[in-house]
Amino acid sequence: MNNTKVQSQAITKYIRTSQHKSRRVLQQIQGKRYSEARLMLEFMPYKACKIIIKTLDSAFHNINQDKNITKQQVKIIEAYANKGPVLKRFQPRAQGRAFPIRKPTCHIIIKLESQ
Image (tube, rainbow, N blue to C red):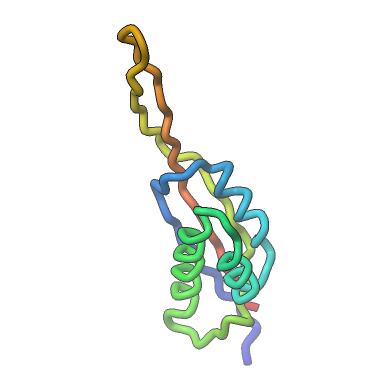
């Protein structure tokens, strides 16, 4: 068995959730093994978890594309969320005023490494 470490990443862009809410979840799984992180995400009550699971699976399939690597060998080395563009909307208010509504988006990046 060779000792070369294989890395891969997956990026999900323009997710309709704030970066702060995504980071709260991503900090929980950073440094964990793939199977442990996936199990944690399935039982967390946050909306961002479904999207993060998809991104994590994509990163795992990227690392597993040409190599035969098991789920126990893969570790999350980086998981972070960057700010995306803000969708600007307006809510009508009394006396003809308009109230701005800012709908944030974020980009999620997950990097994996085989042990």
